[in-house]
Image (tube, rainbow, N blue to C red; front, side, top):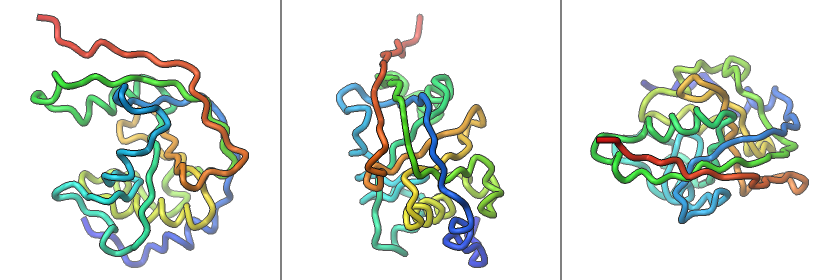
Length: 190
């Protein structure tokens, strides 16, 4: 897949309003890291964040831009959050699973709603093409430059929407409050 030079991320994003959004979201993370800690996203690039290191074989915009930005990936549904963890797990890494599921109450004031990617001239396929993060990176960077602190996007799993929160660009009025957590028993019964 190649990105289209005709898609103008900045123009598409600039045509969309930023909205207030609040609700309960879920984050899966290893218990040794805080639920609001974007440390891993500072180091490694993901679908909507540009870190110091890109995964092997991944296509990103990191060579094209100087900016780096972390993101917290927050699911609007706890089951979808767990499916995301499992989606990135192989038979070899299953035994290493020990993720905490944390519920976070969010009040955000500058959210770009892309729950329908068509509103910014994209398709779900462009956002979720495996190992090609160029469209989502361009969308995220344009949103940040437009003043957004978060994106509301459909989850790759198709189960719900996700809130992709950019903590370095948070509105001063916004809050993320941990309300509960659960340590699911990831193990196989013999």
